[in-house]
Image (cartoon, rainbow, N blue to C red):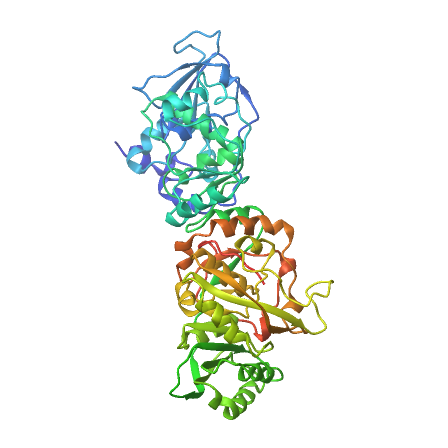
Length: 593
């Protein structure tokens, strides 16, 4: 192809070698938009630059052209010239009538080797439409009769007037009649999505997700391409949301913007149906990630040559005035073979001195005693993970620094644990509420009267953190995860459920929860009913494989702003950010108090 026209700078308003820079600076430009409607008088030779009529995306754009009565035209199309289409009014003569108009749908800006042919073709057009806003502005600046074709233009009926319509979708493409659904999910999701989708189908009764990971192959005919475009349009019309699970392949085609008035929503993998639906419902996403473990200092350690049946793990942050009562209750346990591990999460009061002094007077009572201090405040999840990671027993009882245990707590819970199956990860006692504050207006004496049941978590977390936990189960799910705003306990229970574990009740009142101005119940509120459906589906659809993964960057649907708790959960200060997080990934984890 000759370069004479290209090399003549005087032939261009903007020389070709400057087009790239011009387009880069045209982000804020506003090209003229295609007029409302133009009548088709006689016939039109409608050409395509950058595609052919055998492309489904072309037909989505044709449906937006401002050509009045286009749907009623007779068509003339030859596979030998796949980018030309003759449109004839029903009473017009076939062929190239003297009054035939030349119009073009432009979908490209070719390279220099094809530029002259492309330019020569555009210069004979009486009307040009381009769906790319910046490219349309460039063509206008070059003096061509081009208008921008936005994806939210009203339909001209081109697809609705398909002679076979949706009836041919099954025969030509193997696609069913479009289904009404909550979300039309286009593009291939990853393995996390597809495994969780199977569980979602088993759990969800109303929020149907239609999943089309790949488009059917086409045979190069206009009829098939038009049928597929018609099917996509009808499927989008029956969906509350049109969602793209990828930016690759057909999901990267801007013509898909025609399916939802130009407002497509992309979701980056890995993501699960529960997370997607929660985000569609307007619930913001909270980062849940495995906290970076800070540097740990051993402050006090004493090990005696005695067997260990269970470990009590205590996490503390600025509880110098309360922790001795908690430790005294551990000292009074009837179970002799105990290990005590205390983690001070970089307290700023004199907690460390108070704890050290207590241990110096009581350490002989325990088979092993360990006081650890974080070099920097890392939050509740990191403190518990530090304690669990240093445990030498098969079972750990979680005790926060402001609560206390009854003397039989460890012995009774351990008896239940020894009689339970290997899938039992939690033995939780009944917990008394002590103090002026109550969980509700009834003045209930217990945090909960219910045993562990998966469905009971729908209304929120009702199992307190004070429980005996199988150490191996803690390892299997990757420990506790930090969640902005709290809810680590509920997240941990859901992780255990997802990994196939369960809990059992020890039906005795064996722990006392101190309700005070700094306690957790003083800073939290119950789960609102509008969030319950999401959690209900999640608890059924939890993917064990996904939840076992322990890595930064997993996420969970966050509770509404009214549910925000202080990060100083149970005496823990603001957790420092650990591993970097991305809110676009992760298994189904749901928050709780």
